[in-house]
Length: 71
Image (cartoon, rainbow, N blue to C red; front, side, top):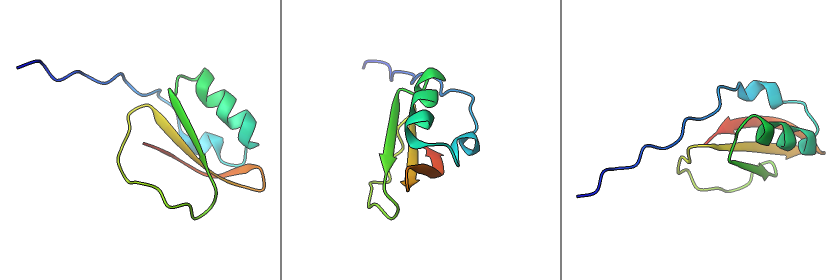
């Protein structure tokens, strides 16, 4: 049986640092800090609950990040 791959470590980054930023700036900053996937969502979007290592989610209202979370 093949070994289970070890996922890469997530950036040591506080999701709170993105709240209040303009969405495009927040996405650019997240990618610079090493997040492999950045997902921008409208408030109340229906999404799956699977956890993806390296993904950062932004809930964006009026062009600004209102909430940010990993996975």
